[in-house]
Amino acid sequence: MKRIYNFEVADKIRELLMDEDKVLEKEMFNGLCFMMNDKMLICVSDHDLLCRIGEASAERELEKGSCRQMIMRGRASKDFVYVALDDVVRIKDLEYWVGLCRAFNPLAKSSKK
Image 1 (cartoon, rainbow, N blue to C red):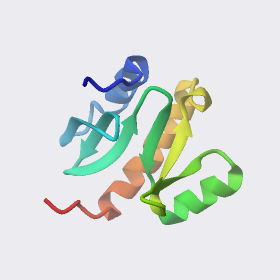
Image 2 (image 1 turned 180 degrees about the horizontal axis):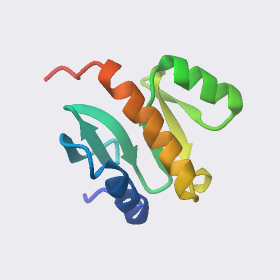
Image 3 (image 1 turned 30 degrees about the vertical axis):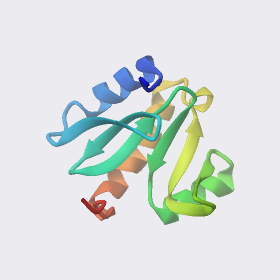
């Protein structure tokens, strides 16, 4: 089954990341994920962004109410948050979330292969 994601937002993310050398796209998490340095950076689905921003940034953003925690198998994935696409209609909003993801990427652990 083909995954569904918001193509317009994916194109905007591509534009924001076009100066990066090691960005790959991979279908996962029921959407299109952008990988940087072999680590998940941000994923766009039909209704949400899945942002890997780190636990400290996630706590700050959750307090603001600008996102919701990713829950996987009944446990909070502390480095990850979901952001509704309705909340990133302006390019500066998308730039903000991509910026948080890029800032955390050097600190993120690579997944086991």
